[in-house]
Length: 120
Image (cartoon, rainbow, N blue to C red; front, side, top):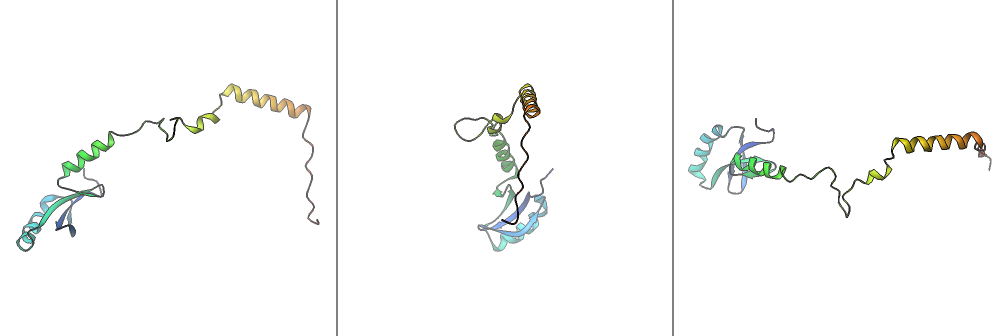
């Protein structure tokens, strides 16, 4: 199935024309008419923001670029680790911290907050 931004286009010299179609066969009659007056006209395939000679060349380039994917653990810089890992704490540690904080708050509650006066 063709992608939405993939189509055949007639190129005259280095400039694409407004003649575009999803199927190559739809442009062949127009191409033959243009070749009579403009011999440097050719039919090219537009995909991935580039012009290609054939649709197969575009598919091969896309398949080659997909093979260069990086793993999930890749990160720029010296160490290829997720910087968020240092904040991930095991469940047991979280529970111990919560228990210590609750114990501390029970034995010595926080002093009441001082209210700021608007008059000053």
